[in-house]
Image (cartoon, rainbow, N blue to C red; front, top):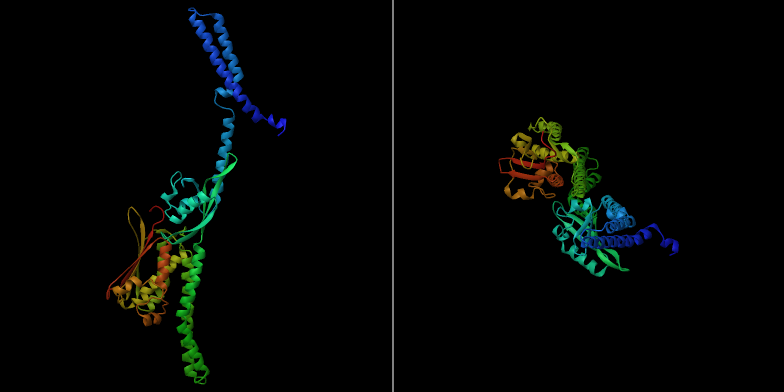
Length: 432
């Protein structure tokens, strides 16, 4: 470094600080000695008091006002530290994935908003183990602190929905006495939920499609062979077989559509809806849409809906699917009762909820079937369900949509007393 660099303003201020401190100490000592001598002489000495005043004035002139006010370089260094902290917080806030910084004791130093949303109990200044109790992650932090090498571990949670993360744990290096030491670690959470759900969706689709499509495909191939062989010139048989083949093709189309819908819903199960929709308006629209089908089957739909909007956080298309499946099932499988009641009400005081219920008065469902109704392809009566055009996926779709909306599905039924399907959603916003 050149001599000119040594004479920078910062170095001059740093060198001047000891001089000011010595001047003040000298001033205090001089004043004390002069005043003590003056008092010891009994009546005081004017000249000694004058020289004491001169010493005080000289000390303040040398020390300067900055030292007496506690200012100087400290006031200039604080804005720099504050600026660096603000920049670090701004950078963390812009990272969409959860990021957590902890010190050598695994105490949280800083975290971004995504981390607080992921871990409800996360607090700055508290141990990370208070909010995250996964041994693999906590042991990984200690391993990184000991070795100084980054590693990756997997973290999963099942409440409120199943989610999987890959946690990258890396050391935070700090320079102390010309040597690098671990000052803590940084945890970066990468969400693997969508990728895992996509893999599961592909596997489930292949397994379910191959099982459920085998029967209609075999039926189609059999009728095609019949039309190509014995029924080649039989016009009546050809017309009847073509109608059956059309029905089987439509069944396969419905099955594939339901499988794809279920897969899309499962892909987004961990993402809570953020839009506000009127559940009463959705129910009213679906009652009007399905009224012709109900009339055709001799069923009357009686709707009890509030006059004012009933707001929930939800996906409009998915809630339409829920109301459609439940009302259509009630019309098809409970048509012998001749009536279906649809109701939307508010309930709850401490935790406001919106309740959507569908009641039919058909043959009802035996108790042993109730726990399995929402399973894929589960049917109480397979032949009867296929005759009604069911795929066995309607209630499974309803269950997954309700779970994504953080709701709850209840099914109550007794043989001969009909069935009641009730869905509860958290109410959005204050009541009117």
